[in-house]
Length: 81
Image 1 (cartoon, one colour):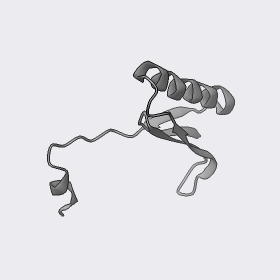
Image 2: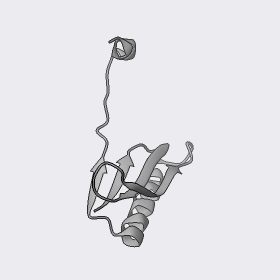
Image 3: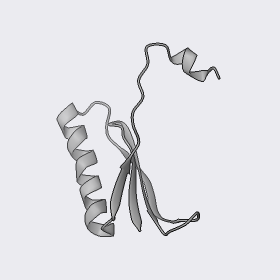
Image 4: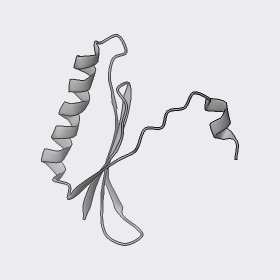
């Protein structure tokens, strides 16, 4: 099985392609898609989308896994365990 894993973001979006079964998948590709902070939002979104499309066409993953974004109003309380 081949998986495209995405850690979403518009400034930096992490992407990886993993392949294999069981407990030790192989890393085929890993990168950080970076956009220019001064670019407008639609251009940044398009840059990320184009790279993700290129990865899908190149590696033909069986599935895609996207990390859920977590927001909080109290970031310091997230560090307490």
